[in-house]
Image 1 (cartoon, rainbow, N blue to C red):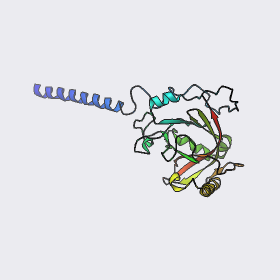
Image 2 (image 1 turned 60 degrees about the vertical axis):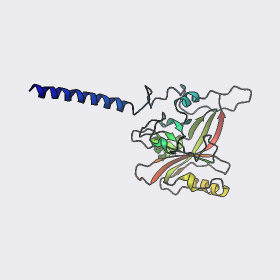
Image 3 (image 1 turned 45 degrees about the horizontal axis):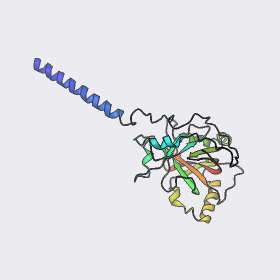
Image 4 (image 1 turned 180 degrees about the vertical axis):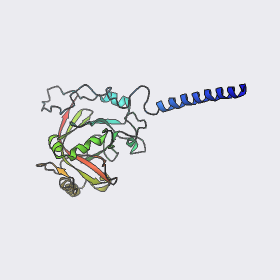
Length: 260
C-alpha cells in the first residue's frame, strides 16, 4: 500500500510539472515578452481616427505631425512600413511586407512577427513600400470577430459605401488619401501577376474594368474618372460564401500630404 501511495504521489508531481511546462510554452507562442499583439499604443499618437483635415501648405509652413511613430514601429519589427486607417470601420492597423523568403509570411503572423492566425495587413514584394506603383494590393483576413479586413464587407452596403469615401495610408513622411471608387467580388487570381501594368493599354483597360466590374454585387461611385496617370490601391479579403472569390475595395490616390 505504501508503495502504491508513493507511486501515485510521484505520478502526481510529474503531471504538475508537465502542466507547468505546457502553460509556459503556450504563453510564449502568442507574443514576445509583455507586449500585447493587439495593442498598438506604442506606435500610434492619440489622434482623432476620423478623416484628417488635409490643408494646402506653403513651403515656409511647418509640416504637420505624422500620427504614426515610425521609429517605434521599426523598433518593434523592421518589416512594418505603413499604416492603414479607414474611418467608419475598425480597420486601423500597421502594414507589413516580409523580408524573408515567404512572401505571405504575414498571412498568419502578427505585427510582432509571431505566429497568429489572424495575421497582419500586408503587401507582397511585387509592390514597393512607397505606394508609387500604379496598383498596390494589400491583403488581410476576413476574421469572424470583425478584425483585420472583415470591415471591408461594410462597403457592400450602398448607403455605407456612399457615406464612407476614404482610405488613409500613413508612411514615413506622408499621409496618402485614397477615394474609394468601387467594391465588388472578384476571382482569386493574383492581380499583380495577371496584368502587365507597365503597359498603358493594359492599365487603361484594367481601370475601365474596375469602373465596370463583372460582379452582381458591384458598387461603383458615380462621377469618378480614372486615367493611366492615376495610382490606385486594392484591398483584398475573402468572402463569406465562396472560397474562390475575393472581396475587393479599391481607391484612387487623391492627395499626398507631406508630414514631419
